[in-house]
Image (tube, rainbow, N blue to C red; front, top):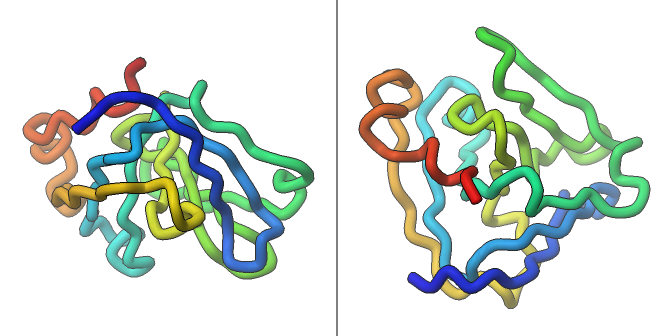
Amino acid sequence: MTSEMITHDGGCHCKNVRWRVQSPASVVAWQCNCSDCAMRGNTHFIVPYERFELLGESQKFLTTYTFGTHTAKHTFCKVCGITSFYTPKSNPDGIAITYKCVDPGTLAHVEIKHFDGLNWENSHKSTGISSCSKK
């Protein structure tokens, strides 16, 4: 996979939350089976925080849910309820982008890998996911 950075735009269903992210056109997305991701059906790719930009007045439409260690910040739109991005427990220095919330046309390839959130510590050590938010 190429590591050349391109711009991806995306956001929530009602379009009140909009963002821009820099990442390759080909990404590795993580399908997690933790209690939250499994219920939402979330599959995300992770970028360093510095490569993410919230656009316009998006902040006023966001709310955040946390549980357990409160490290993950499950951010979602107050209007439509979509989690188009959030701060993952695995990478608190990064942003997890729900790949299906990226506007069509810029993601060329998505490789989906499994993250065993039910056995979080073992999966975190064995998958290398923590490197995804590093520059």
